[in-house]
Image (tube, rainbow, N blue to C red; front, side, top):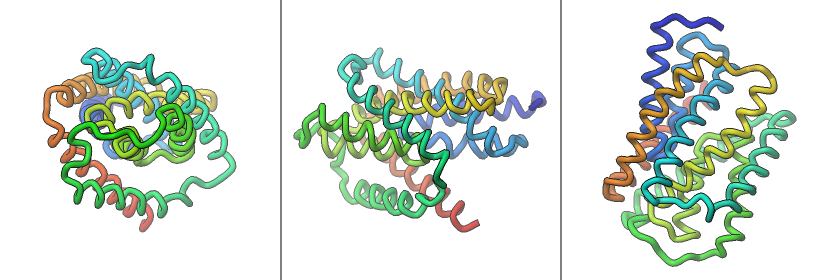
Length: 252
């Protein structure tokens, strides 16, 4: 597929915005997928290219969060391994089942997360007591959320963030940082499948990826500097936008 200069400029800036938003609270696909469709890309190619460009952002955010000390990847190897297994299983399973059937359940779950966060002003403001064995958590949620991301995807970052806060006692900064690492792992699994089927539009993916690197670096740096309250507000806005998008898609 050939794209003109104007389309590539649009895709670049959508990558910048999405990288910024995604590194703080997830949900960058709300920006990038419509942009890819707007330049005339078929849906299956848009989904594939979106995975390529978002991988640049999630990797950049992960590296920056590691640099400023918000995560230590070596301590999260178990989570990475089981997310990889879960996402691979989900990517295979989606070939045999319709992922759209999950739409209503995901909308309900995201609404619960939104309401719970909205009416829990202290949630994630500081670290709390760990309620689950760390190894068991990474095995269980790596498989579950990894599978979901490989199978369907929307809201994955929100589910990871909430689980890390409620069960491992992380604050919003730490949960946001870990989420980007696990997002990157499951992104790579889906991307590998799309590459195998030859669906990725490389020029668009690399142009948006360049924008993602800029946006993700800026967003992850901001998370390190800002108070947790800022992240909480951003998180609520992004979850609300994802809910609206999913409801709209289910109605049309």
